[in-house]
Image (cartoon, rainbow over all chains, first blue to last red; front, top):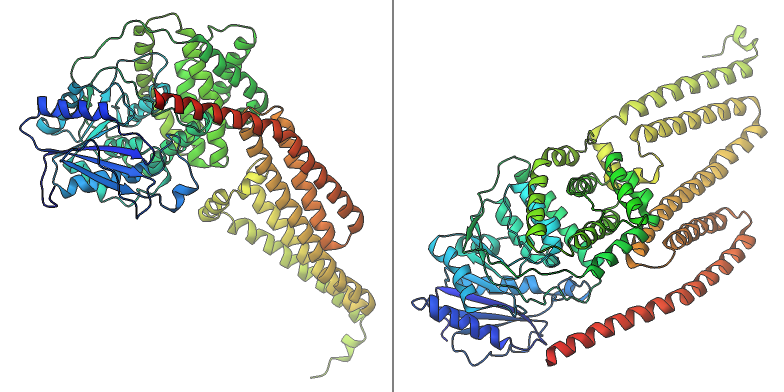
Length: 413
Length: 214
């Protein structure tokens, strides 16, 4: 391949140095592109993180339209470990977008290399809105299962909906499409090394795109079988990284979301696919609730000192119900929204050191998802799904409370 | 210019001493008023909030800090005025008082600052320990937090003792014994925790290897 070659579509994969080349995934991408976009020229940009500067990145499957890139770990990546388990993943994204800019691609499709459910038609679903309808960011929507993507469904997506009026259902998906316009904006940014970008790069891109008014869409695709979240960090450390990142982004963009202007509506492409009724394991839910009950003994006074008395009373009542053996008890949507908003306000006003606030949030999150999993363990997906969608409405409806708390005012009951 | 005879006939020393006290009282009152007013600015509030210094107080309040600073300045000036008055009356008493003010008082203030700083650190670290231990699922998170609190406070006391020379050998010995005990406890307590963690990571690594092989 010549250095002067130009391509219409760039497909990017961020691989770690020890990862096996995802052959099936590459074949499916190739099939999808040749089936649905046969008139477009495409290239596969694959970055290999963790190689030294002298090591050459390997070629994949003998493709002649590939651009292998080596991404060595920078200084800080040797001492901090992100929750998704791939240090320099953000630098990998940056390298892909840089190469896509170099070859003049009109759209950059980044694919999670651990996504085993990727089918050729995903290429069509994700690329078409970007190439033909000029959307800047397209994220996938997979058929939902009650026990999957709990943090996106319970926290990140509804919180973004509360801030910007519309939010993708999977803002932390490792598969997404970036337009030329958004790519140039991202490449011009100087905060690629910030903690929020390093820990949760997908959220960083989604949040920025929503805050800066880029056109966003989401496309319905098939079931995900990604193992990206099987990281080696304990779940609470992962959660702390995510919550610190989202609050930091809220602070970074407070001028945008507090201005009251809603982002453009999020258009949807394709048809939502329904799964057969899937049952979440009740053991997981119980495990989370046990964690919450144990943490309550140690942290109740801390919660009492930072939460509104009504919010704390609701948590106290929930705890008492659990202690009485009522596993059908649910941490209500309204209480959950208040918890998130009050912690966000405390974070902004530095009521406690910020790492302590993030740590105090963790058991409350276990309470939320534990009660959700356990309550919905014998229902099919329609119940939990509609329930989670209404959560976004709660976040939007209680948005004035966030504005007051963020400004340091005590919330009126 | 000579001092008039009618003034020399007065009890000059006691009158001058009283005047010194009155002047210091006036100065102290105005300084306290100024400190309380001067503290009412936004940037000081922001600085104190951001530094986290207010978090060390039971009820974080800028008013308390202003009041405290005003009181300290007030009593410092009153003491200085009293010392001047004594100096006018009696040279020996003045020398002892000056020693107290210049040597012992700064030492006491420094000791107070160190103890306050260590109390703040103890609160900060123990709360962080409590949250982290709870999230890590360690048994008895309260005990870990209390251990950190007591250890930090005791370190502050040992440091103050070294600085001021009060009961140095006793507190130093006690500190070393407690330190050794804490190290021993940590080793004993952390061994099973480390074993659990190692087993967990090893299990995950094996699981990932299995998945790769499949």
